[in-house]
Image (cartoon, rainbow, N blue to C red):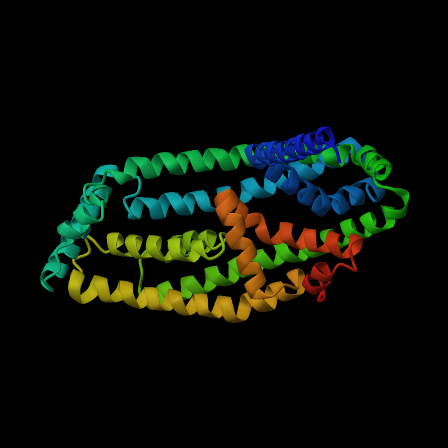
Length: 364
């Protein structure tokens, strides 16, 4: 090999590596768009049977069937939101969430009660807050930031929902064209595998999302029972908030526990309940009850619900969620399982003889 050929080989290798790195960087930057696209594809697969029903049984035109389907989806989502708005407003008023001054006074009172309780046990809360850089939590400065983050999150969710519905509209409306393009791209000898993959993914994801809804409903009921047993005010709304947090694997239950404990202690302020003898023990009992609920969910309901939809080992799922969380944050954790399950299905269809794929998909 001449020096010229060696130089050319080195330059070519560096160029390929640079191109791969640039591609990965570009994909990372547009990861949100990729997530929207993946979710839209899932939504399309789930809604297409209903579009097909409208076209075949009710003789709707394709565009009208798609518009009707998406309109019903929007109506369903709006109905759920409207169903809980009066409850949230009523319970929020009871919790003083709509009165910032009252909420701040209650929060400061709660901190004072906690400080007095800890001081009686020779623990200096203010010193701990200063040494841990948590002083913003002692003067209510974190509330504006929290509200801003919450508004931003709601805005992102709304933007994401609008984007998913917009993409899903064209995927449903132009499904025949996309299928034709897809078939033209896929080599002739791989078409059957691709079609089988899509059908299997649709089946498994449908089971997964239905299982997720069932899991959240079970957690909601169990949390609600725990809160009722210990006489927690605003039991339903707190249980609902905690159940929603459980959408985020592993991290969600921790956030739910923190939120529940704070709301329970704040709601007891002004009722005349003594912090040391009533509020604190009640909160601890509730946290124990929530811990028991999580044990039931992690060891009974979740394995039973998801075993048939993902067919993956719990450790495998944990690592996938952890990696997705590190790379893409909360959004990655939420979509990690369905995305990973889809990749396993595709891998089994196209690379059935690969040892790693065979080991990961032996239960599919």
